[in-house]
Length: 173
Length: 156
Image (cartoon, rainbow over the protein chains, first blue to last red):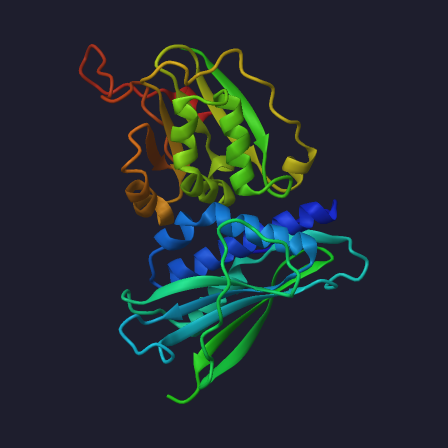
């Protein structure tokens, strides 16, 4: 099901996309069989950072890394989901605010679930010069060597923004 | 018993966390212990707001004395077109012994219940259910049956 709301301002679009990307990540975590306590426990900080960097135009994407703490560091990535931001998804900047949770559900269905021992972290992929937001620190992505990236399509839109969803599966067995 | 009702514009007018901050401002003046109690559950309640459970069913504020307050959040076009809530006639959490009932979807119920365990002022209920009239213990009628306040099921 897709829901849509007629447009408004860029601030409305960034808030809509920020909060719903976080909802989408929570849905992925939940439907993948993992506990949501970690994402919910950091909800306000995550939402503040995503909204701030969408508003400033520095957010390139939001990444969910799923890893197995029992595996060797550097080889512990077991799955990854990316929302990537398209700042000119609607050329006229007047797109409806919409969300398609079915796209997220389909992605989880295609990808499958993870053992409950797996953990996860959320990373904002930002361009240089992004404004600081309390509660966030810098990090590097885990290697995706040996994984194949799949694109599902745009899951969230509004104003001139679109958020495309992608997932990674291990390509070498 | 009477009930006051307020609607607070949420996403996309403000983030889910900012919505809870607006509700905190509605319920408590700065510098009170109740305000700290509300801030302590901000992440969990912001998630409930983001999931729009608080649009389907109200956050019910049950003061130690005085009127109950039902707070709904508005989302999407309703939020954009909605007005900011008027201040309440009094601070409902000024007297200790208050409780707040939060609506939650079935998928999140167990996790939210666990998250709110350290916060005795808060309880969570299935978004499809009303809440009992009594506070900690269900009220018994003269014939021994539990009394349910069906007005809580109605939207203002």
